Image (cartoon, rainbow, N blue to C red):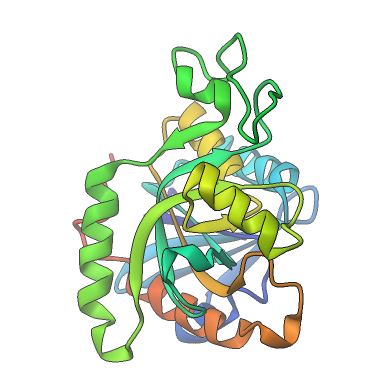
Length: 249
């Protein structure tokens, strides 16, 4: 049976607060040992898949899933680093308006790559630079609904571009360089990969993350992972209004 929502998260720890609010009713494993937890939220069904971190694990996990099932919507989620220059703080939640795998393309003398001479997705020229756009109406509706639903929890909900990286940013100097080039809200390691795969299968996707740290901050004593996980759980538990989900035949 195809679920209303497929939730993708790199680790069980990141999504643990959501599972405490909306416990799964069953669990199964894929051939390669990936966990798929199934449950319900407000009479809507979900599958939750723990993909493992990084673009390769995420690509594998979503491909394995979509070969057998067709969810109405994919939610890519987890905790992430947020850029200080946005004015946002640790614990804030962001919805991606676009994803950019910044390692795609041809190297240039500048920080940003030039596009490849071929599409990575047929008839999608933005894929030549690893750029993937999200459906703007869904982003806007989700932002409005979550902002209203979580106003009493004092969770700031924002939206903007995300970047996907395969190497974690090591300093504020590097973070400032990334921000001046790409103007991202958040940096994570799976979003562009999952968006690429969802596009190939023509499945709607949205990405929402909660900030555990500032990008470039390597002192983990200054991170707040527990707060990020708590806010992420609340967000995922409020994601089911009909205006977010597409029609699913």
